[in-house]
Length: 276
Image (cartoon, rainbow, N blue to C red; front, side, top):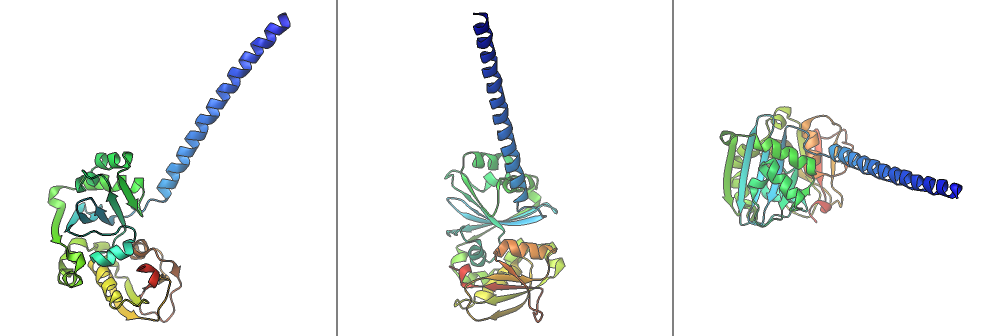
């Protein structure tokens, strides 16, 4: 009888001990998973430099936003009457005439551009799952919002142009205005030369890409066509300049080696896959 009581007491203690071990292990697993996720989000963040170019699409309008964190400047171009596809940012860059690094697509019908220029607004959109991030993650969104909310009204430039993305002739007429809004001084100062090659059946594509890059302050020194190619690519021997890193973000093409007879520091080959 005595032995049975001791066995029962030991069993109760053992059950409690194993239950405690289970909860501790479960808590450690959750914490470890959160830490790994945090490290992954940090490593994959895109907004790591001084400036970023964004396409912001709401249910009502589209915007192009350039955020210059270093100089604390914000430029906003509101585009009326135009639906811009965020699924292909290379195509969106060509269509808008402005080089884009990423995009916010706000799905909340009641939200507008003001939601993404405050940390509180972005956090609410993320928590409600009312924002789609393209080539960006949650940390990028919070960094962008934090930098944007610090910029004063005096350092914010806002322009409005109706329906210009549906008429290529209008883009050529407003190149100067786009350049004034979206040029990047750091890109201009680096003066890394770029060659754009059209390897598609679409006439004038290289010229459109060149204008788009020039509106961001990039130095395009050559435009030409080549034999039709399925795959797009970026060719360069450079790695460190901001210009190179930005070109990779804008086009996200595979990188290949640059031929020795190249006329520029970077060659961008636009293949059929870029416009499909």
